[in-house]
Image 1: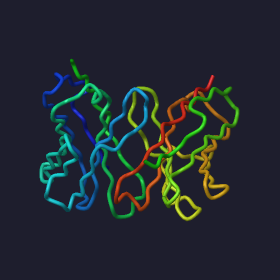
Image 2: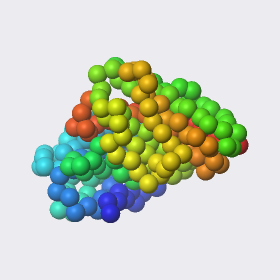
Image 3: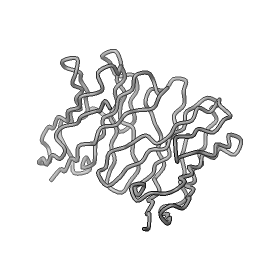
Length: 116
Length: 114
């Protein structure tokens, strides 16, 4: 069974500093997508970044980047120059490509606090 | 930027009553989904819908649940006879293709069953 593990229930970072949120997953599949979603207090799920497993290059979106280690099944999120608005729950999610439509498997989330 | 719209934002219902949660996906999206998040727990997949039929569903999506796209713009989740444990945040999502570019989620409907 596919599982997604976020080992850090809570993290804290100083404004303007860098923080890394970790995520590991378990799968026997070779083709899949990985996502990071942000859930602020408003509860909306906002896509932060996505990665296709067949791409070796790590995805980057402005201040957000990932460290994708396929062999280790690790998909960590780095937030650079942290801002107060980054404070939220962050969910790592996984989806196999073949035979799946929307069946995202989420981790339990990491609550990120940003200190001014 | 296009949004997925969900109504109502909060619904309170008596146990045993039927509820319908409504969603308006992004207009050019072809795939639609429902997820739920029980308070303090992870987000869980319920069902995906494509070409006017269910394409995949989870174990959670039992006979008390149904989905419909009644008019080409709305996408609804019906819970036939609500139970206390159905209290959760329900998220609708849509995608243009099957996951290639990620999923756009709505803001959710908080369902409280009393």
